[in-house]
Image (cartoon, rainbow, N blue to C red; front, top):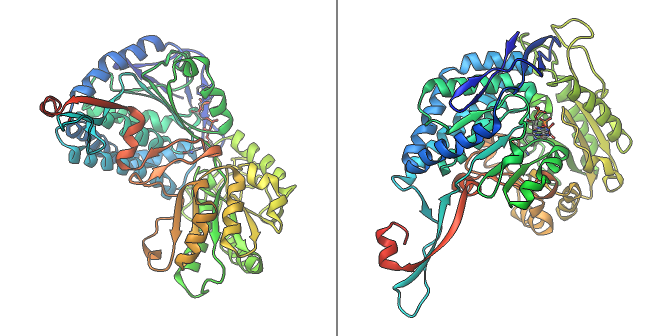
Amino acid sequence: MKTLRSYVQGRWVQADSDFVPLHNPCTEEPIAQASSRGVDFGAAYDHARDKGGPALREMSFAQRGELLSSMSKALYAKREELIELSRLNTGVTRKDAKFDLDGATFTLSYYGKLGASLGDRRWFAEDEGAQLGRSPRFWGRHLRLPRGGVAVHVNAFNFPAWGLAEKAACAILAGMPVISKPATSSAWVAERCAEILVEAGTLPDGAFSLICGSTGDLLRRLGEYDVFAFTGSADTALRLRGQPNLLAANTRVNIEADSLNAAVLAPGLDRDGETWNVFLRDVEREIIQKSGQKCTAVRRIFVPRDELDEVQAALCERLSGAAVGDPRDPDVTMGPLATERQLHDAVEGVKKLAGDAEIVHGSGQRVDGRGTPPGKGWFFAPTLLRSEDPSGADMVHRHEVFGPVSTLCAYSGDLGDAAEAVGWARGTLVTSLYVDHPEGLVEYLTAGGATSGRLYVASKKVAPQLPGSGTTLPAMLHGGPGRAGGGEELGGISGLLLYQQRVAVTGDRALLDRAGAA
Ligand code: NAP
């Protein structure tokens, strides 16, 4: 069986005990094991801070951007191998594996280009500057400088490549060394990505480390100049962000947590029009893609009450076409859930939702998958629920079922009411709004546009270009208020801010100018 290793202090460390098994979700067979036993977390942290940090801070944005471009190319060169490994480790279809891997290479390449555009500078000013005294000589400007600590990244299981890459891209471009910890269940993919990056040989010593298994006492070591960026469930986030050392040192913490995202259908859309079609296509994709194991997946579908039956019929017909099973079967369109625990949580989660809403498609139970022996594999078919009165359906707005599960929710047809209802989930990553009239968008934004971190507005003119509401683009912010974690990642140059300190530099303008700081 494969034993995963950690990469710290510029070398690979293999444990000899405390292993946690990884399984093939289609067959339930153990395929690998992970443990970080033997990693000296103090030395790993010091090495990253004292070697990787200075090396990156010495480099210009253009040089750091070159590192990211080379990381992107190295991963892309092993794309086929990584697709196969993703299928084995996480049970995803080829399409879903590409979604993760191409997301990783695209994001690295995007930030590589951003680095090139920032050029030979090692920092930048974020404003034009201001005269502070009687004469223009006394001048001030806000600089963004790399923080002097280490960026520790803890990722969720569902995007082992993209999660690693999107966080690393922003930290490295900003000039901070990274220690990345993938979720154990999908860590084989992340470990192989790390091997490829290390073998490429472009990263400075200490700039990138990987921990497979527990983080030991690493998080307790973080202090004033470090960054802790977490992606995962709200429960784990709450436990980790409250650690006394993080609070005492005001360590910068960014949380990307779970989210009850919404799709909102504006009333009266033309049934032959593109906006209606894109609504059905997006919602179907959001339920099925990666078996619904996406933080950005649509969990609630708000539809005008008098259109609910029609939407339900159209969606049920589409979902009936899903073929659940082992993705090695070419007809399969949806793989299993990633772990036994995820399957258990999905079954229990649908029971909770069913207390507040009616199941109208699927059973909310484990099913047998195509191409696998009966009773084996963590398969779960698409499940749609319906709530006529979502104002009383507390669970629908509170409980995230991390699988192919979504609930149709009736609303009055007034987009202000829909915006209010979206807000009942207390903060989401993304809301998709299907609307052809600007008045509808104004109504939505005014009544509650700020409850989601991203608003994906789908209308007929852009319909052919839309990537789907669940696609996170590096140029656009990823994160959302409240329940979604309150964090912010990506968003082009804004994505660097987490890893930078804003410093107000004031003084003689000519002197600052000569130092590149005015
Ligand atoms: P999880 O159980 O909360 O685990 C997330 C990460 O935290 C894993 O790497 C896990 O490692 C680690 N972890 C758990 N306890 C820890 C501890 N005491 N110290 C250090 N690390 C610890 O979440 P998940 O099941 O992997 O992911 C599913 C959830 O993530 C869903 O709720 C989903 O909505 C959310 N998610 C959010 C986003 C977003 O961007 N907002 C993106 C993807 C997923 P182990 O695996 O080793 O336990």
